[in-house]
Length: 84
Image (cartoon, rainbow, N blue to C red; front, side, top):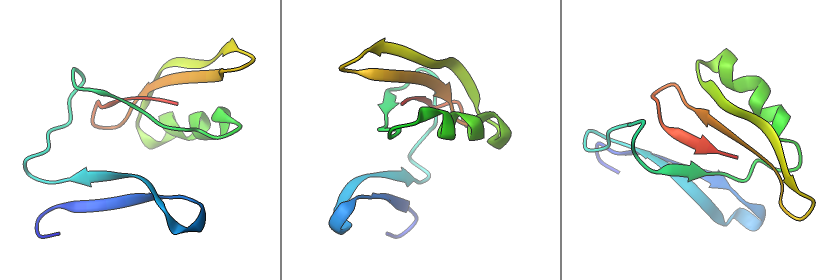
């Protein structure tokens, strides 16, 4: 899409479940929105890759309730805030 890079999160039956967009008008920030992603059944699989890839875990895998399950909070390599 011109000077904008876009990648889609796959979903069953080839539906789009979200995307990541990058371009000159998009600025990463630690004070921007928090992005929430479904980390699946085992967040630890994702968390084990974050620091090796240059990110930083802020809150490790933490139990909430039986109905909700677990969450974690981390910064990506550009300082964006994400939760699983």
